[in-house]
Image (cartoon, rainbow, N blue to C red):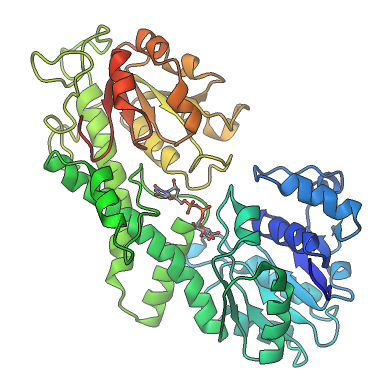
Length: 475
Ligand code: UGA
């Protein structure tokens, strides 16, 4: 807890704003959170949090019970008496990939005259380089300093990441303002990087771009491993012992997604293009992600496409795409059949009449967020090829009208796999490891599981009579 509590306003109660508000209140500050959505404010006042974020509901309830945390729909009123005002506003991908700053601009305009004399405004949202200066110009208040203090929270770990930060980055033109913001975090005992606003803004984009680059790298590495029948997980383990590389964030998957990495890499690309700065790795990172997903889809198409004259409801025990003489439980043709490079082969194969079961739709485990989910990107491509898709995700119990043209959501994994040609694991929910795989084998029409998260135990699946197909690994 803090020795000197500050009065703080947080505008926007998305996962960044709500986490920031609730965590700052837990440190002893007095926090007023504002959100334009009256229903959301009502729910938050009752302690109801509609995002899946461990510990957040408790912090929201405790903060209100102790009087440190309040919620209001009145943005102007929220800043009254505030020493520090956080902007935690959406900055979605706008026209041409640039960050859309409409919310930041609208709020700047709305609170311009209501901000207390000498307060500090903090951009917490991910914003393009130069936004701190732009907000300062919009506010037109020489007594107010605009500071860049980007967040590095992961969805599903937001409270933990806030309270145990790797670093706190504060960009400010004025030392006094930077010190005031740093003081808010004093109890957290984290390294603080003090810099100018442009450097802080770039640091945030650079972090997400670097993470995306690691993932594009490892997904390409997986393809290389497949080609040489090597094991990408072993290769990554070997790399990870080098402290200059490290083992983290190098798990191959169905491509990277979520509400931040795609949006931020595209926004940075736009910033570079608009400013005439060459950064070829950015384009390569983005393109690699798209090509990787295409390769995974072609693999499924090549093996599951009924093909001319082939019955699509292969008998249990028949491995689609398997080499002649292959046995159930043996690994079929990820390495031997079908294009793994996304080119040629059965790229034009059709999945008409083929039902596929999808396990997992959220962009990663531990969240109910579907924004820019790689699972949905893959589902769309499979659907374009004619597949019928039935999906189960532990975080999605409701039907989703917005997805009804794409797939059917069912409420158990068994319902997803029943009568399906193959099963595709797209999100790394740990509970998928412990499914009744014998039952799954009995319900699929062909015993193949595409594990695009390398989540499952191949031996366990083989014992259940299923053929496991991971990424960048052979059995
Ligand atoms: C990301 C960053 O990790 C946070 O540091 C950052 O603060 C946040 O964006 C943001 O800018 O707000 P998040 O969007 O929650 O956090 O998602 P990640 O956990 O980074 O995962 C991103 C994607 O990469 C997911 O699709 C995930 O499945 C995938 N991933 C991640 C892999 O495929 N392999 C890995 O080893 C790690």
